[in-house]
Length: 157
Image (cartoon, rainbow, N blue to C red; front, side, top):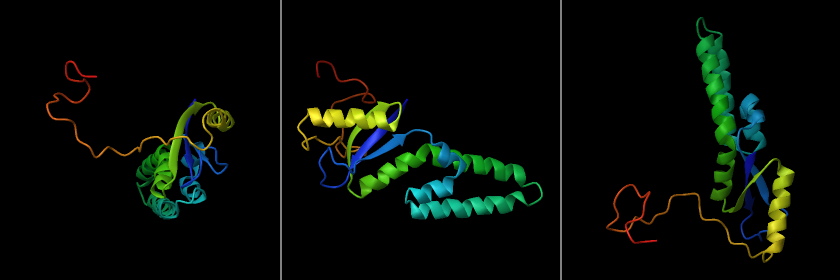
């Protein structure tokens, strides 16, 4: 079961039809065609960089003894794009001020859409509060806390 990140355009209500459902998981299309997948997702610079790198890896494979190294680097590149590509798309949308509305675990996109839109209709339509940012908080831990922050000091909640 995959998790779906639901993002809406800047200033749009929670039940906007332009909401994007981004599957947070492994993408087979991105594994087999990393450069094309990035270009289709409109990540132009990264898509072109991956395409150039793939061409260089093809040229490396023609050199005597370079086939194994090129194959390993190609598999590593494909894994990187297929595992981190969807999150890169989500970060790119966040940079363009899209709002992360929810994260829903579902079997497929249709189920995620059904769960999300049924929840937004039940709540105040258009009044859903966005989730906190995925970036680390700029605030620091309060003074007097010990440890790594896994446990609260005695007596606090």
